[in-house]
Image (cartoon, rainbow, N blue to C red):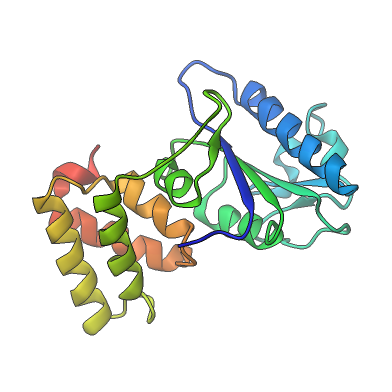
Length: 209
């Protein structure tokens, strides 16, 4: 679980406008991009949703990607993932390979503390790197190993079920942390949903956190 990009994030805060959080992320990304002499690019779930909003307009032509349109017309100097779904975060991660990625968190479908902990993302609110409990990391490593087949029925899904049950028994199973951590470990959005369903079976209380 070692990322090949420099990472930062702007955690969700109730009451803070998402545009204000985006501005923080964009400043960080643009600074990294300037150092590389390349433009920053934006990834959102849908390309047209921010057209006409001044903050997002500079990214409109050739610098904006989405799951349905994952290509950009420039070599990215940094990547901003604004309120990404798992699919959008996957696109942003691919674009940021060997580069820099900053994520603006949305609480749905799940929050991203696990992702931030796995990649050691700098929290742009506190200025501190994000870390995971070492005990949790061991379980996550095992969970990822069972995902080679997308957690298909049989060995992979049974093994994942056991790991999740062990995590629940150790009070280490937090739905959002686990699922977002998988985003940082090349686990596909479809496979993440399989784990989400297993968490619902293993620990319904954890699923409602």
